[in-house]
Image 1 (cartoon, rainbow, N blue to C red):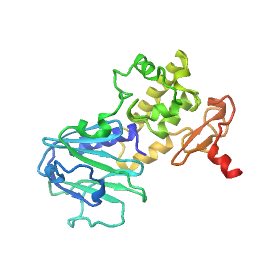
Image 2: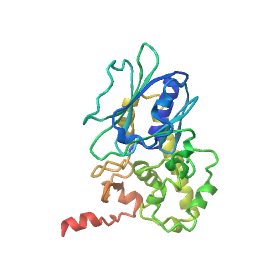
Image 3: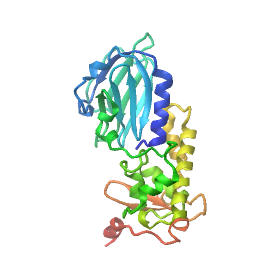
Image 4: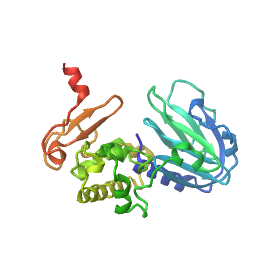
Length: 288
């Protein structure tokens, strides 16, 4: 799933390549991705793109009229293209969900695509990004200057939930998903099962520092990359996430996994849990 660093990079690509240009056509292919109807998609046509921004994991393309807001969900992606075909795309079983064509003879623009059968890609056309329910409920952005250690500590106070889930909760902190929460907790040498309310001041500071360093490093690595290279950069920068069975790059212990119904987490026992493997109830049931 694209998270804060990747969406930040996509926003930068759109700001560089699309800002100041006019939208010629917006062509929906998978109608189910459109979550709003007023204004219609056609209201974007003829409008000039003024900016591109990120709200958590939402991508916001602003015009001199409505905003086009996109949530890429688990398997969505944005592909910038030069020389888009003359013929409009046909609805079908392929990954293409929506095409935006900019005015001009070069026929540049982007495709929104989504792999797999479980569709979650969402597109909104709104007058204000805060009209999107997911944006309206977002917590603070972890890279914002106002997100201080004191603000972070205040969010954790009295929260009887595992720190892994707290970091992923978009209403608490915006933009962090499954992958970067694993990386943050590994950098902080913190068990994903620790209750947020039980953390000491020193441990809270450790998670806060790891959060800022991990996200800023990922944003910096992604800066200037083409959209096609962002996924590979994300995978290559991971220390534990997606690396089950491989050696931890810090201590050499084997990276382990806990599986859930729709996701999994990865961690290093030596670095994060005092050498003790975490219980994996799903795996335990399979072994019975």
